Every structure is written in C-alpha cells, then in structure tokens.
Length: 158
Image 1 (cartoon, rainbow, N blue to C red):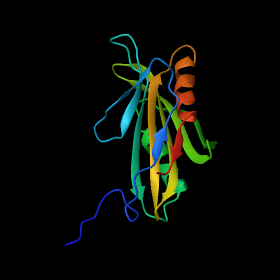
Image 2 (image 1 turned 135 degrees about the horizontal axis):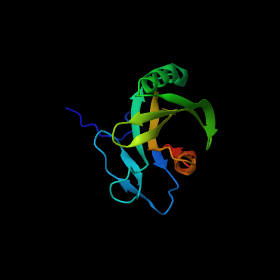
Image 3 (image 1 turned 135 degrees about the vertical axis):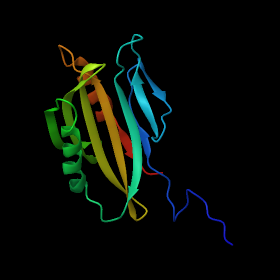
C-alpha cells in the first residue's frame, strides 16, 4: 500500500479566499460550506451574510454552463424579482453574479445574491461560490455593503 496525502501535487488544496470585512462583520463556521461572513445586527433582526463554498469540477467546466441554472433556481424563490445579472471582473477573476429580490415568510423582502467563479487548479476547475443575502430596505445600504464585501474577495492558489 502507498500512502497518499491531501493536499499534494496530485490532489491540490482548495484556493485561499480572502475578503475585506467591515468592522461589524464576523466569521462563522457553517455546515456543508467553508464558512460564512455575517454582519452583526440587533437580536431578532435578519443578519446579512455570505456563505462561502468550493466544489471541484472537471477540466472542461465552463462558467457559462452554470449561469442559466443559477437564474432558474433563484427564479423559483417566492415573489422573485430580478435585480441584476452580469459577468464581472473582480480582482483578476471572472465572476457570474445574479441578484434577485424575494419574499421571505419571516424576514420580509430579502435580496439573494449568488456569485460564482472558476479557477484552474491542478487539472481541475475549483468553483468558488458566494451566496449572499440581506434585507432589502428603503435604501440600498445593506445591499451595497454586501456587494462591497463580495467585490473585495481575492482568490489565490496555494
């Protein structure tokens, strides 16, 4: 038998993901994800958050394949209204970003923002996915804060 180890040359580590957080945001462990970035709010209020995840895809994966799936999934949210959808360049990486407003039974009107990017890593594509949500208020300050944190994301290979 031969011992193998992760990470290694054949089994590369997942990319490092860094973000610039406002002083009232924290990091939290999250089941089935790398973790979450969460804004501290008054108890009982909905906390804006971004859940970080990475999945490894085959070398032929294309970001364009995922865009219609994300759009169709978010369209199914209760009262979904599209806000924006675009391919953008953030910190040297091409992302697909899709935003919708929808009605949550307990939290009221929320925005769901999904941002995905693919990074070539050791013969595979690591898919970085950021799922953000926040209340949609009279002004766009929380949504703008969520967008600012996502725009600060830097992805580097180890």
